[in-house]
Structure formats: C-alpha cells, structure tokens
Length: 223
Length: 226
Image (cartoon, rainbow over all chains, first blue to last red; front, side):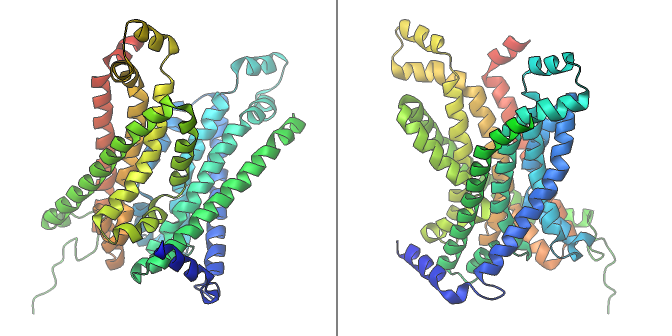
C-alpha cells in the first residue's frame, strides 16, 4: 500500500506534469501516436477486409493473418526498423511497427463481420436488383458495423497499451515515464506511468462504448 | 599492427554466418531462457485458469466478475503489465513470469469457459442419467469436450507469450529480447535480426506442436469431419 501512496504522491507533484518530460506532454504524444496509428491501420485494413469479405475471397489469409501477426514481437519489429533507413525519420519506426501490430486483428475482425451477415439478406438484396457495390455499402456494411467497430475498439485499446513499447526504442509517449522509472529504479514512477496508461486505455474503451451506443441509430438512418 | 578483420561482423551486415558460429552459446542461452520463461508462465496460467473457468461455469454469478477482471488485465499488456508488479517482485525473473501469467490467464479463462459452455445440455444430462457424479462428469465428459476450445486458447496464449517475453528485456530477463535490446543500443544488425527470427521460429514451432498435441488428444474431431 505504501508504494501506492508514493505513486499517488508522484502523480500529485505539479513539477511532474509540466515541461518536455512532463505528463501532459507525454500524454499528448501518446494520444497523437495512438490516433495516427489507428487511422493509418484502419485505412489499410478496413477497405481490404470489406472488399475481401464482400467477395468472399482470401478468407484463409484474412483469418490466419492475425495469428501470424501475434507471433511477431512488436518490440523486435520496432528495433529492426530502427536499424534500417526508416529509423532516421523520427517517429517513423514506431508508427510502422504499431501499424503492423494493429492491422492483422482489424483485418480479421472486419472480414469475419462481413462474412457473418445473413446470406439470405444478401441474396434478397441481389434479387431486388442491387449491384455489388450497393449490396456492399447499403446492406453488408451497415449490418456488419457492430463487429467491425468492436475490432476497431480492441485495436485502439491494444494500441494505447502497446504504444508504451515505443519508449524502449527512445520514442515518445507515456512509456517514457515507465521506462525512466525502471532506469531510475523508482517504483512509484513506474507505477504512476502504468496507472496513466491503464486509465488512458479505459477512457478510450469508454469513448468507443458511447460511440457504439449511438452507432445503431445512425446506421439505421443510413439504411 | 594487424588490419581489422574484414568479415560480415566487421561490416555489420544483417545476415551473418560468422555471428551464428561465434555467438552460438549466447544464442542458445537466450533461447533457453526464452523457452523457460514462456513455458513456466503459460503452465502457471493454465493451472490457475482451469479452476477459475470451472468455478465460473458451476456458479453463474462468478462468471461476470471473473471475465471482467481478466478482460481488464488484458487491456494493460506488456510493458505496462510488468510495472504494477514491480513493487511485489522487484527486478527479477518472477516479475516477467507474473506479468505473462496474468496476460495468458485472460485468454485461457475465456476459452476454457467458452468450451465448457459449449458442451450440449443433452450430453450432460445423458451422463447424469448414466449415474455420473459431478466430478466424474467434469473430468470425463465436460473437460474432454471443452478441449478443442481450450487448446485454441492455449495456442494463442503460447504464441503471445513467446512474443511478449521480449519486452521483459526492460528488466533484464527477456530471453531473446535481451539480445534485441543490446543489439539496438550497439547497432548490431546481425544480432537483432537473428534474435527476431528465432523468436518467430519459436512461436511457430510451439504453435505447431500444440496443434499436433490437440490432434492426438481429440481424435473424434477428425473422425467427425472426415
């Protein structure tokens, strides 16, 4: 319990919040990093998954790619990129490593969501004379939206937590507070950093929860 | 003065046979530590997860809290996961193992519970009608039928653990992660690439071994499909 109060004291200290190494700055870095990676991964994964799911092709690849992705350590990818020419672009290696981490689960979830749409509805839509594109955007996409959004939510929370690894390779974000705590052998600081990351992850989870509550109505309007 | 040796180590190339032959014992030690950390964590995770899942299945009210806690644990992986345990274990091997146990626990509890829940009610009633007691029902009917789902969870947990051990490098116990960490600081390309590739190889081999074990343990799933 003593360590918890020490961690609380560390967080309560105003000097830890200000400046280049301060919590506010690290929080902002973490937020920007997560949002950029999430947007880039969604832009890559979702169109591919939606088209593959619509066509019903490449299923084995789409489902297995997340298993393969899990076997590749993000930390190893990050360090490998750091030693290549990509390493010279500041946050480049971190963004690429995190995108590679987030794309497989996004792809798998969106593909599964598209395939789980009731086939009889799709056939009915075709029978009504809808084109492939109309079926995809007006039938399959709205119906699979909950599963696709769940995939995005899982990816976002995992990105928040995994973005801490960037600090091991000198990147920014809340992981720096944890890494610095390990280097200083300051348990309160490590704990404070972990609490901040966990809180951030829970906030992201909450935001998606609210968004999902609002989404069905919006999806119904589109249809 | 002798000229510096002009081999792939001196040129700092990505792929280097010289590295493999001269640093063989370092690599083997790291692989051994990696395997040890992974195996111990997943085994402890399994030993803890089984009773939790069985209890959650038996008493419906326990399922909610058990799943909620393990899900929260899952949202704080790797680096952040090691930190809250630091006050308890200090900078040690147990810290890495404890973090990985908590992580694999989530996957295992969820999958074992899903497997137990998928056992058809008729099957359980048939066994009860044949005079099976609750323990015998669990051991000889429910658990074997839950095996495919449980093994799927075990495979995911194992593969995740292999890749997460690398993060343990921050406390100095990361198996191959240590080599990657040191290689990053010294700009040693061959070491980083070799260790990364070995990580993936370990994960794939472990996955295939578990898949093989699953096939051997559940011959009826193959018969049903074929």
